[in-house]
Image 1 (cartoon, chains in turn blue, green):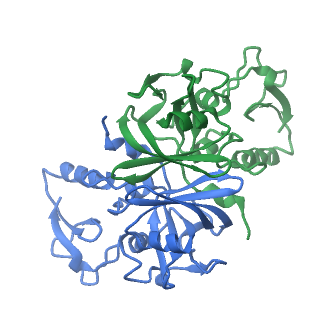
Image 2 (cartoon, chains in turn brown, orange):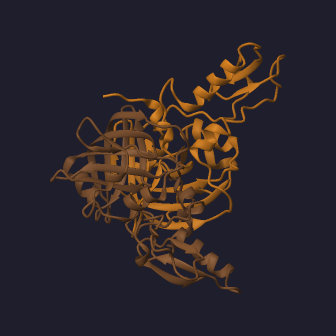
Image 3 (cartoon, helix red, strand yellow):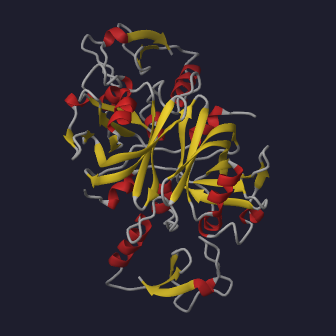
Length: 231
Length: 231
C-alpha cells in the first residue's frame, strides 16, 4: 500500500458555491470543488462538504442546497469570503449578488454561470466530510463565460486550499508546492514579500511595508494579518 | 420547477477509466466523468456508474475498483473501446497497456497519468446509477501530461456522450448540439459526410464512400456501420 499524494492533483473539478439556510434562518455558504452530476434521469447532483463547515450542518438540517457554478472571472474576494471565513461569523452574502430559491434558500448569482436547487435524498458520512446526494428541482443558466476549474484557481490565480477542503493535504497541497518552487527559484537573490496568515496569499514587493488600506485580495483581511517573508 | 439542461454543461469534470473484475474473473472497465475526491484523511474517492454497465456489477460484487486518470493525448480508439463497447462482449484491455493491482484488479496504464486502487465502503442507489464510495489504498503517478477534461473531449475532440453516462441528456447533449451547429453553418452549401451509427462520430468528405479498411476512430467499428449524411 502506497499513496503518492501527487496522484490526486490530476483529478479535475470545478469550483462552486454551495448555499443553504440553518435552523435559525441564517444564510450559509462555502466554496467546494466537489459538486458532481451522478445521474441524468432524473438529474441528481452530489456534493461533499466538511463537517466543520456551517454549510454542512445547514444542509443536514434543511435537506436542501443550492449550487452556483463560478466563472473563471470570479474575484478573489468572493473566494476569500466564501472559502476562508465562516458563515457563523458573518453574512457572506451581504456584499455579493444573490437571489432566493423557491424553497427560501439563498442562491449566489455573483460571478455565477449557472445555478441548481437540490432536494437531498441521501446523506453519507465519509469521516471528515458529509456527502449529500439529491434531486435537481431547478436548474438555470444565469451568465455567460467559462467555468473556473480548481486547476485554474491553483495554477493561474495561485490560490490556496482551505484546510477543510476534501482535497487538502497538509504539507502537500499543490498551492503550497507552488510557493515552495518560487522560493527555490529566488534563493540566490531573496526578495521581500508579505504572506497572509489567514489564507496564505503571498504578495511580492513593498519592502517598506504594505499600504495602510491594504486588504488581502484573497480573503479580505487587513494588513495586520500579513507577515514579512523572504522569497 | 424549471430545469434548463444547458446549466449542467457548466459542471467541470475529468475523464477516467474505472476497472474491476467480475464474479467470473472477467476484466471489466468503462469510461466515466464521475470520479471525485470526497475526503482527504483518509483519502476517499467516489464514482457513479450506470447500472447497465458490466463494470457497475463487477464493482458491486468485488467491492473494489481501480481508477486511471486519462491524459489529454488519449486516443479515440481507447475512448471508443471503453466508452462504447461492453466488457461482456470483449476484453477491452487486450489492446491497451495495463497492469494488475495488488488485489488482482486490472489497472489501465495506457494514456494514463495516475492510478488509484479503492476499497468500496458504501454504495448508494441513485436510480439509473450506483454511487460507490471507498478508501484509497494505493495511488500512483504513472505518466506526465495534462489530464483530459470532459469539456475538452466535447469541444476539441468533438466526442459524443454514451447513452449510459450520468450526464447524457437525450436530444440535448453538448456534442449533438455541436453537430447541429455545424449543420446549420454549412446549410447553404451542403457537403457529404459519414456518421457512425454506433457512436455518432461524423467525418466529412469521402463522397465516393469510405475506404474499405475504414474503422471508426471513436469506437472502432467498420465502415458498414457508417451512414451517409449531408452536412
